[in-house]
Length: 201
Image (cartoon, rainbow, N blue to C red; front, side):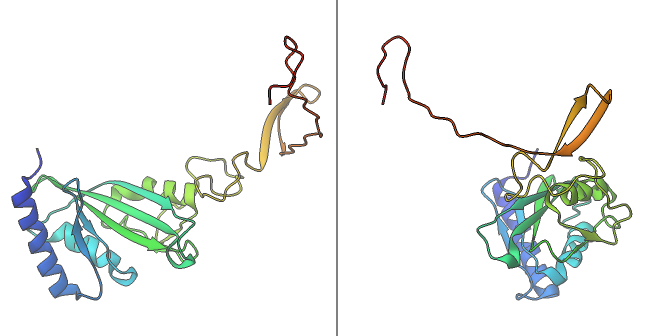
């Protein structure tokens, strides 16, 4: 059962006041979403500090990280094309929080596995699907795709068909991996139906 909206707004106000006092108003923005979830938008330099702050403070105690997700916004500027969301859960306060970090995908983010061990595989998934890398990660390698896979499937500019195809070769009697070729010859289509013998257009 989650906190009533009055208590939740009070909690958010306390977090906003203390966080702004500790980190400074220029470094973060704190908001309440429509689903009564605390949303924190820290700056790049203070991201790890804000996560540790939410985890250790007595009145917040967001001790569990339940999910890490990535979102690709190609229409944004190159500075903040990717959005990485850390979803935190407080068992003591029965409330949830989302800490949001924007990145361009070229510079790695700092892994939060030292503070939240549960994000180990989740950060690997963000790396595998979006190409957002993490420094200080204990084992950053692909988790959902093959080792030789090229590209990152959930990026909006990734081709829908991919780069390689896998098929069974009857001559070699094994599965082979080869470059994908989608060759389509020019075809004339007359839009005729065999029943009416006239065009439908």
